[in-house]
Structure formats: structure tokens, C-alpha cells
Length: 210
Image (tube, rainbow, N blue to C red; front, side, top):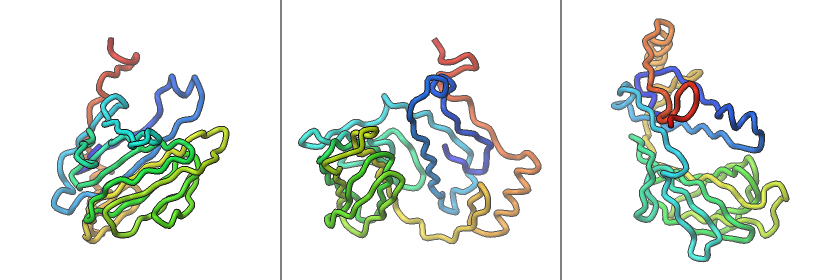
């Protein structure tokens, strides 16, 4: 979703998933817009599992899903105005993967499940932790040989982008460049000026379209 000039939104799992139970993850990532694009029209993208770019490591130990941006010539479906790469990787116990990474991008890893290590120094990382990579042209992630029984694999999100390097002011759900812009955003919200986006593609009030 591109918030742009502002819109009201809510993220919730499908009712069928809530009723059936089980473990699922919700990850909300905010990508800042450069000042020149802050007030662009809002936009929504419906990206489903079948549309992401699927890759594997040479030994088959890692499944890599390119969600947004580009990885070694493979383009993900996500469209962002600030150049980023976002990947969801699943590594089997003991598997290791080194991914090429743009040197003008920063980079970090966030663990959704399991245990492992990152970087050439093999710094340990586990569920709920994030690691920030230093400068370089690749990212390395390795899964521990032994994982917990409830999470047999290491599940990690790898992401990064080109730093904007502009002033940032934020309060509540609003992210702007100056305090005056924040005050204007609150006024727009209070006066009902925020936009709307269509419902999720392929879904109706009764459920998926036939």
C-alpha cells in the first residue's frame, strides 16, 4: 500500500484463518517516501503467494521468495517508489545462503521463526530479533543445525533499500518531513480528507469471487 496523501486502512487476517486456528505471521513494514512524493495519490497492491518470484539456493536448502525489488536479475511483484528489496527466505536446518546485494542499499534480517546466524562472523539471531548488516555486496544467512520442534526451519525476512537521507518527523501513524506537515496531516484526518482504496482484489463481502 502507498499511503501517499493519506488514507484510512486496517489490516486483519481472513476470518476463515482465524476460525481454523494455527500459526500465522503479520509483518507491517513502513517504507518512507521522499519529500517530493509524500502527497502522491494513495494506491493499494494485492500481492498473493502465487505471484511472488520463487528461487532456491544451489543446494536446495533454501527457498527464497522475492516480494519486492530485484535479486540477481529476478524481479518481485511489489512496486515501491523508494527503491527496496524485500525477501522471505526459508532455510532448512544447517542450510546457508549468500545473496548478492546492492552496495548502495542498507540491509537487515528479521527472524519470523527458528534460530540461525548472519554475516561472515555468524552472529547468532533467533525468533523476534533483527540484525543490521554492514556495508558490502552480499548478505549471508545460516540456519542452526538443530531447530525447535514447533519451527522446523529458519524463517527470515531480508530487506533493505536506498537511504533517502532527508529530515523525518513522525507522530502516531503519520510520517512527514516537518512538524508543520504533521499538523496538516492531523487536520486532514480530523476533517475527513483522507482517501480510500478499493476492496482487496478478488474478494467480496461474502468471500472470494467465483
